[in-house]
Length: 120
View 1 (cartoon, helix red, strand yellow):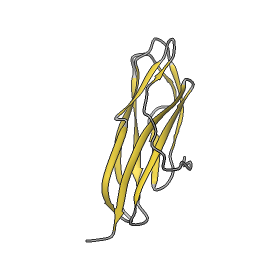
View 2: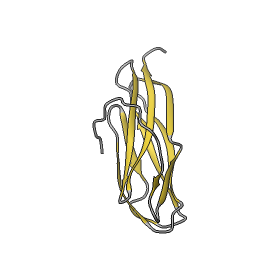
View 3: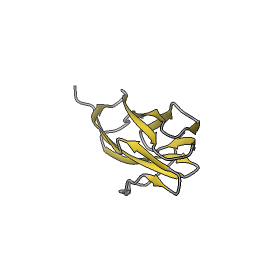
View 4: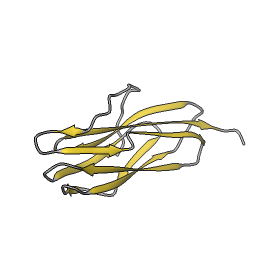
């Protein structure tokens, strides 16, 4: 799922409430330079350190990035699940976006950035 976010720097913080403590690790992914027309993939984890289950609804990001989760539904207390960010640059420019992982406790933000290049 793709969503449009403006290139804003966001404060990365875990979701905390009375019974929830959910984090994303790492909180930032740097792809470096990726050849235009190719793809680079990086993994991340969502961790539930809280006392109750957390519902995972999905992941959204814009630009040349795509997000995929390997978990939906309940993330039980003490459990983790993984996701992937894909970077497919279409032009020679630096891209910075924020992937949002949506839960019933709020959104986790994961900053992603990289550059496209055409040199051989």
